[in-house]
Image 1 (tube, helix red, strand yellow):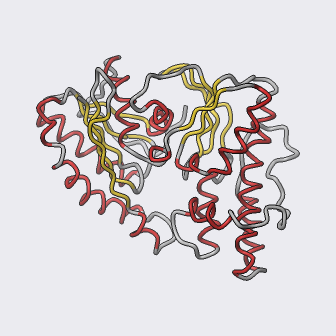
Image 2 (cartoon, rainbow, N blue to C red):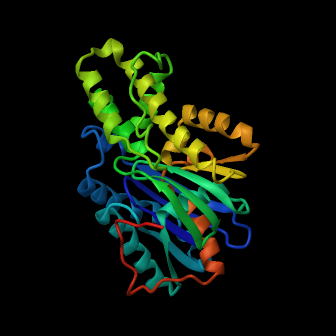
Length: 325
């Protein structure tokens, strides 16, 4: 079995995955959403302290599995440096005390493998990663063959939802709150401009849209918020689908996947489904419980890395807040 740790942002999670069957034997996550909601976003130093409390608590529940562990895996990149350190430090201690190898896992690859928890992999595929920290399109041929073909030039899709929610005083995380508010709103009322709609670039940008929403919020009252939320969600999603449509003119999608915390957005899912219909492409989605950060996806990557003997050095494994393909 492999014990896996995730602490890249504000979720403390540990999983146990059986190597041969890929079965998830244990998974527990402690969210910090309540503690950070009063600040309207994640406070790194607070997140690190909460990880220091939560991870040992979860680890105690894993002791019955210790005798069967063949490796320990941990998210080492990308993420918040102060929170990544908490997980990596624990993983190193486990590796040394149990005399087992350590596997440093890229969090973004973890999101790709959230599609395959307790399943076999399906490659090649085109992946749209939408989260609080990233918005990018990747061509994935295998664990080690991943090419980023488009990414955000500034804010990410998920980050823009958090910031719009903060403008309205809704709380954190913003994604589910905006989605709920937008359900009864008029998507056409606020005519926000689609970012980069005249640009030939296949890239993403949310800073301009975010600013347009801020101006609308300042000129409106709370009775308008559901329409602002609906209009924002519509344009934020349309920006993605327009750029993907442009990309599909040169690269025909066969198997397409949406991953990352913001992939749980139901409006985004429905619009991507419509976009793929003319291409008869297969759409892969993670289970909703595995869209946000979790250790189960890290464990699923770790199984592949263990089989390929892609181990790290306890002495040399370090955190890398930024990571790119």
